[in-house]
Image 1 (cartoon, rainbow, N blue to C red):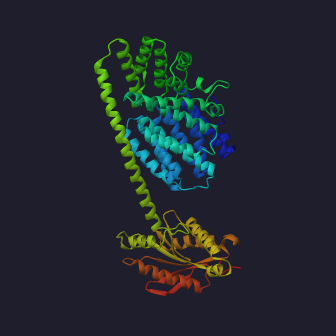
Image 2 (cartoon, rainbow, N blue to C red; image 1 turned 180 degrees about the vertical axis):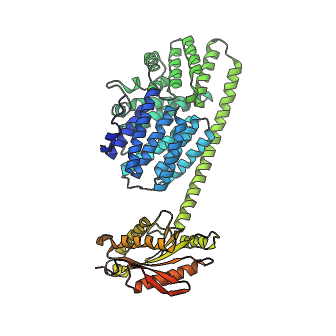
Amino acid sequence: MDQGASGPALGDKSDAWLLGRARELIANVQRCSKSEQIEIIETLDGLLDETQRRGEPLLVAQMLRAAALARIISVSRAEEAEQQLDEMLAHTRRHGATLLQADCHALRGRRLVLSGHDDAALTEIARALALLDDPPSQELGLGRRAWDRLLSTALNDCWIVLNQLGVYEAAEEVITRAHQAVRDSAGPHEITMQLMNRVKMLLGWGLRLERIGRSEEAGEKFRTAASMAIAVEAPFAESLFPRKAGVAAVDQVASLAAALAFAAPSEAHIDRLRRLRTTPLFPFDKPLLSIALARCLESIGNHEEAFELLLGDRDDLPDEHYQPSIRIGVIHELTRFADRYDLGDPRAQLADYAGALEAELWSMRESQSAALDTRREHERLSAMHGAITQQAMQDPLTGLPNRRALDERLRGYASSSVSEPLAVALIDLDGFKGVNDLRSHADGDDVLRIVASTLRDSLRGDDIVARYGGDEFVALLPGAPLAAATQAMNRAVTAVDELPRHLSHGVTLSVGLVALRTGERAEEVLSRADASMYQAKRQGGNRIATATQIGDEGQTAPQDDPTSAVDEPT
């Protein structure tokens, strides 16, 4: 099986090519042999390695999704997907990729269903839907079409789990949202996937309605599914799904053929359904195909053949594709044939068991719907509370921690019994007033954002940079003796001084740097840092000043720095 470019050649491919190749492989993995699935997984792992080398956050997240999804679809490798899902969740949280974070929860739900942990799967879907109920309008620089596609994909992955669990009302709501997300921008593959998914859902829903005696409603579901099976014809011919050119979609896709047969069982469908039973099938398609074929055989009086067909398929249903509603549908169909046509032992015990189990499953459906709504609201409120808490501790202009967050962190350091050195730097911008007076406050805001970003990038990952107010910032450098902290802050001073003039407008830094003393309160250390900062100002700015004598804040020493002159903004 040709999997495309080999490893070394991937470096010459564009990001768009890598993403398109991953989508193509995912479309193929659903209808191929296990050995081919393994090849696809290995190819996707190679694509993932290449995207991680490039480091573009959105591309990495999408490739992690592809690598995890291929393992879930292959089923035998599903347990391995947990590693990619863990990495994907951490990555999407770190980079604020909300849609892909939600999709990660949905994929985890799919994996949990395969292992029989239905309740845990429902919790994951609740988490995903809570994130998707109020997603950001834009993130990571996505265009509208790409954003819509990611939203639809995440909703589709939620739908798959809800459909497998038989929570059809919630599944209908979710797949409708998925359709609306890509209604104006969807390509043929997305349209095909939406229609095929809805066909499968409607067939499973109709079978369940039949089993509780709501035959008229079931018939409506089957007829709607049949109309969608016909509508999928045009987009399917241009989709990424493996297909034979010039052959109708209903002659290639089992669920579409089954939909036509459910809506109007007749001899006309038998040959098509028989042939499709011998082809590679999507998960869960075989039992739908078997029931549809049995009803068509029943329509021409071949009751015994229909019964034997269902009996064989019931015994052959693999545990790895376990879906309670569909499995019980086969058992119910067997019981119906046995009772109606006196075929073998009707096994009253089996009928009673199936009826009791179905009643229990129907009750579970209602409780699952209620649990989903409750957990979804809980996750939404938790997310809202987290966002409010974050906003209260974050400066809205620069995205840095604000004064409240800084004060809490500094008080924590000051009250800690751990004897770890802590350097505290108070930073003021030289020439910033001129930017606001001679240019505009909008330009001043831009300068503050740029300086904030430069400070953050110049220091270590564990260091804390906060906006203290106005054009003042504070940096906390835990574990750094004064000499090491001085070197670090010199890097920051130099980085700001070397910013392009059109970005900084000539603004530089004056830094007062001190070390936290044992037992010293937060207010006291900030006061000493402030005194040192003013000493740096008096020395001409664009420099660092540190306290050289404990208890004597007036004694400061400007740091040796080649950029001692202050450039005033033009």
